[in-house]
Length: 428
Image 1 (cartoon, one colour):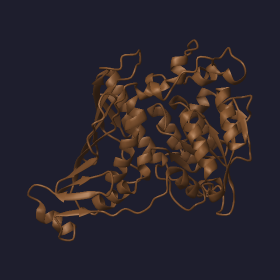
Image 2 (tube, one colour):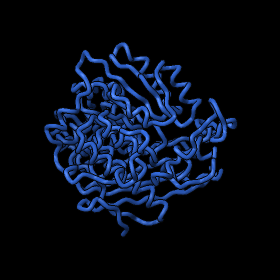
Image 3 (cartoon, rainbow, N blue to C red):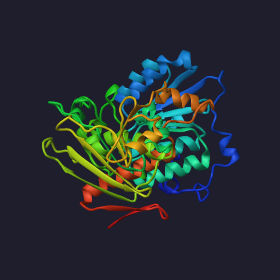
C-alpha cells in the first residue's frame, strides 16, 4: 500500500461480485500465516484502554505462543508511546505506515467503531490477518463489505465478542441440534450495569492536556480520528468529550447495543443456529435516556426484539440504571435451557416424555464443558491452521446486522425489516 495515497471512499465501499460465492482454493491457501514453529508478527491499531490491554496480553504470551508484537498505532501520541514501552516495537500516528510493513503477519484492531470496517478491509488487502474488536463495524453496509472481503481474500478474521469463547454456547448448539429441548421458539438475555459514575464516563477519562493543537505526548490527530475525509464521521471542531467518550455518541458508536449486547447476541446465535449465525427478518427496539442525562446521544435503557427466518424470536436488554439482569435462556417446545455455566436442561409443560427420550431418560440434565481457547489464543491457532475462529465474519456480520437494525429502530421509532435477497434494511 502507498501510504501517501489512502484508499478512496469508492474503493472502500465496493464489493466483489465473487464475494457471495465460496472461497476459492487460492484464498484458502492464504488463510495460514505460519506453521507451528514460525513466529507470528503482530501489529495493534488503536491502543486506548482495550487495545493496550491486548498489547499487554499478547506480549505476556509471546514466548509460549511464539508471537511478537512489533508495531502499534494510534492517533494519540501518548498512547503510541505507552504501548511502545510495553511491546518494545515501533509506533505510528498513521496506521497506514503499520499496514505498509511487509514483515507483519496479522493486525489486531481496537479503534473506535466507525473505523473498524475501513481498517479491516485495508488490512486484509495488505495481506494480513485480522482480529477486530466488537462490534464488527459501525454500519450494516460496512459489515457486508467486510464479510465479502473475507470471502474474497480468504484471510483469518476474528471478531471479539467474549462469549463466543465460552464452551457452553457451543455445547448448547450440539444439544439443540440433537433435539434435546425440541423446537426452539424464543430466547432472551441481558447485559446490564449500574454504577454511581456511569462506566462510559469512568472508564473513559478525559485528558485535559491533550488535543490537536498540542505537541509531543499530548498531540492528537483529530481529523484522522474523525475520518471525515472518507465519510466515516462528520467533520466537527475538536471535542474532547467525543474523543475520549466516543461510546456515548451516535456518529462513532451504537451505545449499549453495540458495546454490550453484541456480546450476548453472537453466542446466542451460535447456540441456536451454529457457527455462522443467522440474519433476522424483523427488528424492533425501544427504551430511553431516563437517568444518565449528561448530553449523551445514547439511551441508558435499551430493549431489542428480533424475529428470525428459522422461526424463533429474541429479546435482549441492556441498561445502565440497574444491573439485575435476566439470564441467558433458550426456550424449546419440549424443554428449557439455562446458559451461563454448564448448559442446564429441564422438561416443560406436557412434554416430559419427549424430553426424557432425548436426554437418556432424565427429567433434568447438564451438559459438561470442555476447555476452549480464549479469543486471542484461538486467533493464533486459526492463523496456524489449527482451529476455526470462535466468531468468524459470517457470524460477526449477522450479529452486526441485527444490532445495528435495533439501533436504527430505536432512533427512527419504527420496526425495521431485512431483505435477504438484496441484503438491505427497509421499514414496515
